[in-house]
Length: 225
Length: 243
Image (tube, rainbow over all chains, first blue to last red; front, side):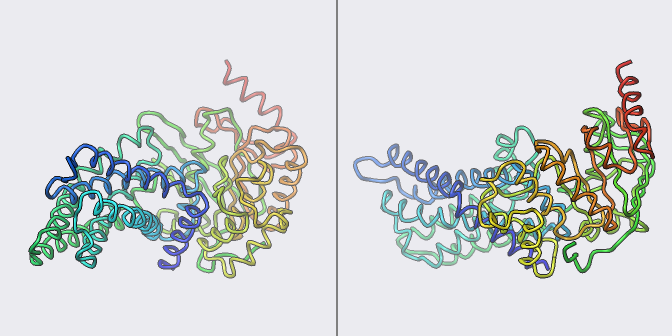
């Protein structure tokens, strides 16, 4: 039952997105704009700033992720469909997980555009260790989205939700951003220190376990009333 | 009726006992009590802000009373709220439909969420009852208000609920659609459902409701068991409000 509900929500969200393309277009456009603005400001005479690529990648992910989270729940608010989801006899943590995976998939798509673009503009060897990079991006994006999905669902009825979401989300996800930036920067060094990369990934995994568990546990009481 | 959710418990009455609900300092409901049995259409009537929608949200188990209690037969929603929702259908003022999805996809999705066996067949039956089989694959966003309302009603009934909650179901409907809705609600009553309808439309309510609870400022202002006394009671309640 739990897995079936997760799958139903995920499939529904992806179908709606494939038809409207609203979140994908806005998220990618916003992230690419962000990267380009930094490139115009920081790349001087074809020389990018040292270690700048990792920071810019995670700034773009955080900003685009906030936009995607807001839009994903705004869509559920407009026709009050979130209420319909909560009225179903489905486990509410499954609803949370379905929404989380949908947003994760969308951000994964945005990252597929961002990584080669940043590698090109900042001459960064981001694709030198694609497996490690994928692992850092997956664990980092999961941690960010796990907290963001919970907050976005909680704030869906708040009048100033667009302001409140980043205000609540960014302070809590600072460890994810730091670990993501440090882990990615470690991959860009000429002599890769795999111990360091593993350390940052372990930190991200720990964050993911704690916050996904907390969110699954608190989603039901937070969404009642 | 469609196939029901297999695990959902059944009940034959809804008992609202001294229910109050506050939002901060504001009291939306104060010691509201009523009872509705199978095969009954109960109307919640009253002016804007009377507490009708809050009462429906509490009955839908989306909100908990600040004090008092509700029982679904012998079942307490605080204990079995999740499973009970499998026997409750809600048609809100907003229609709870995804405009990007087709009518068939919307109904199949909600049938799946309610664990209806053979969701596709249930969705097809719902579309037939709504008279929209030929528009099954069109996105709901392209439908008129009346058509969307028909899909939304079938969405609310896809799991054969015992308790059906309707919030202003006649809003935006033309005469033919409103008559069709009245016919469908009468069918549900004859099938043993408990229907609770919050409405302003006295003309439609008059021929439809079996019993009426008038709410005013969150309190029960009057209860009417005989439909012929409806208009007089409504006038009386509204006059009391103005004075």
